[in-house]
Length: 83
Image (cartoon, rainbow, N blue to C red; front, top):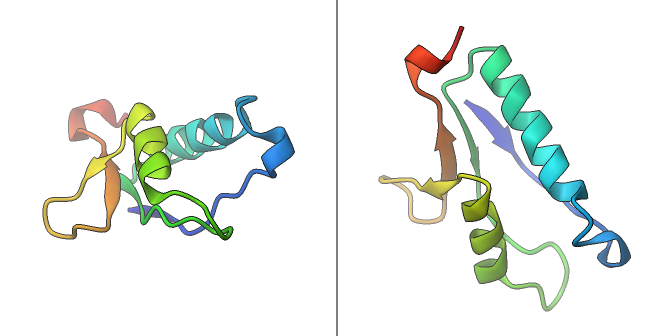
């Protein structure tokens, strides 16, 4: 698996697609290199940040709740999708 530890986009640069592009690049790289999944724990880095907003954003990018760890989100790739 590929694990994303931190992703921070400066507040003035948010909602412009930078974070989404970074995650898409990570996803493409993970698929190309035959990783089985990408995982992360969505925790706000800055004071006052919302974990729920992060979970929602990652959800729109295809991340789902890991069955075994309640704080972990993941994208699992199908073996047949990896070429």
